[in-house]
Image (cartoon, rainbow, N blue to C red; front, side, top):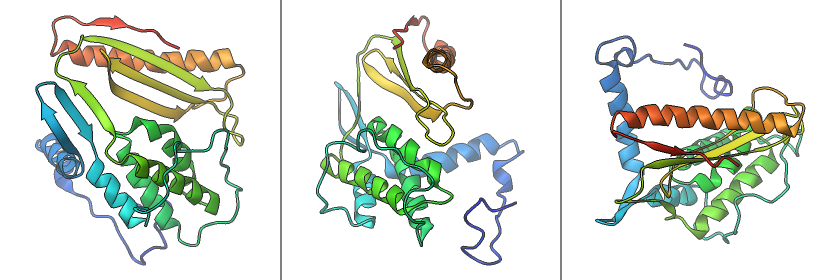
Length: 245
C-alpha cells in the first residue's frame, strides 16, 4: 500500500498495515460497522433527549478541538468566513508544519456531521491540504472562533414530524479563481428537519450560470431519489416535495 501525498517524509520507512478482516471476507460488513460506530459514539453526544425529540450535537468534541488549538479563550465571531474572501494556492507563504493544518481540517470535516453551518467554509479549506499556506490556516482559525460562540449547537429532530422530503439547491458560478469551476450546495429536509447536506466543487467547467444551476439541480434530485428508495424500506408511503431554489 502506498502512503497518501504529504505523509512520505513524516516518518522514514513507514508502511501501511492492511486489516484483512475489513476487506473481502464474510464478516467485512460487520467489521466496518464496528470500526465506524465506535469512534462516532465516542465523539457524538446526545443532550436533554425527551419525548419531544432528540438534539444531536458534538459539544465535547468541539471543545476538545478548541483546547487543542488554544482557542478556548479566543474572541468569538459571528460568521465562519469573511464574506467575499477567496483563497488560492498562491496566497502568502507555505506553512512550515503542514500537518497541523491537515489535522485541524480533518477534525473540522468530521464536525460537519452535526454542523452544516460550517460545511462550505470547511469545503474551501479542504482544497489546500497538499500545500497549505499561512492565509489558509488563518481562515481555519476563524472557523474555530466561530465555533467558540456556540460549541453546543447541533441538529434537533422532533419525535413527531410530517414524512415528506424537501430539497433545496444552489450554486456559485465559476467561484474558483484558478479552475473556474463552480460550487454546488444542496440540503434535504425530512419535514422541518435537516437530514442531508453537501457542498462540493463541480467536476467540469460550466459555460453559463444556467448550466451550473441545472447541474446542481440534477445532483440534488439524485440524492433525493436515493433517499426515497432508502425510506421506502421503512415507510409504506412517502410524499416528495421538491421546492428547488
